[in-house]
Image (cartoon, rainbow, N blue to C red; front, side, top):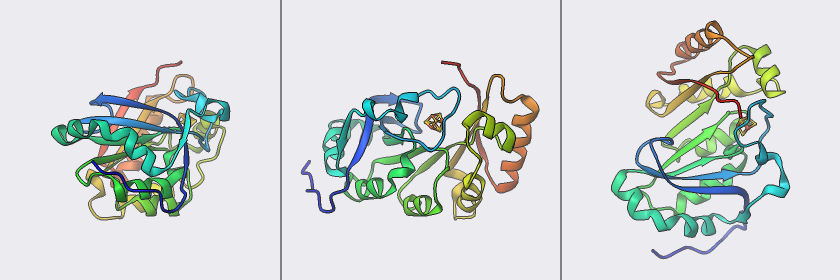
Length: 212
Ligand code: SF4
């Protein structure tokens, strides 16, 4: 592969890259790219070090990231896989990801793991580039959400509602519905599912959080 040079000076802090993932980030073999920083502080955060600036692994441009992940090009092409962006909150780096998507191999699939707790412009910017949105909704009860994340729901539901109004999103959005020990119960999860179905969400992953 030949690699483009950096044109706009975009740079992002990463907490790590995990290669050769299968079955956890959508179809095929994927490489998970984790970004530093998140607007939420979830009680059982699986990547709590994403908040710690001292734990940033390295800062890269989109072009440098392309060089880092391109070693698995043949795996991605053979399996229909690609890149999964997570974190942290990858939508905080929507311009970086947009740039990456314009220079990557076109056949690579892009998945995004997000809470949607960001300004709408970030969601709009990446809509044309993301094949599958994994939305970690936590719980749609504002009290539970606040107790668990230490933040109000803010733009989350409005962003999801907007996303579901775009063409073909029933196949491109999967909402994670966690059972969160000490925070919600089956009734709460059922209420969230019902509300989200009314918005047009058709794909759910209901599961139990493991307490770290
Ligand atoms: S949204 Fe994800 S990365 Fe952010 S604090 Fe919650 S679990 Fe951690």
